[in-house]
Image 1 (tube, rainbow, N blue to C red):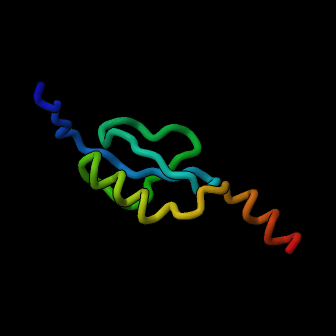
Image 2: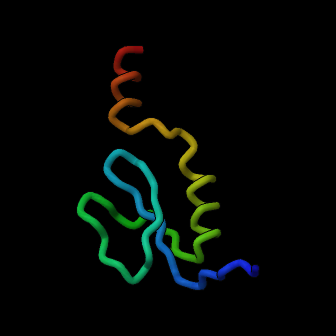
Length: 69
């Protein structure tokens, strides 16, 4: 069976904790999320997230750990 193709446009979005996700480009941004400056097909957006989001810990945890170091 052939794979289904997804030719929709996506946005890479980021929340206040610097966590990343995908959002269909034609959808409104959910509260607490903002564009991360990248738009493209699903695979390109996932690759961008993989290259950008290298520390999966939430920002609040990173700050707390840095303050106690």
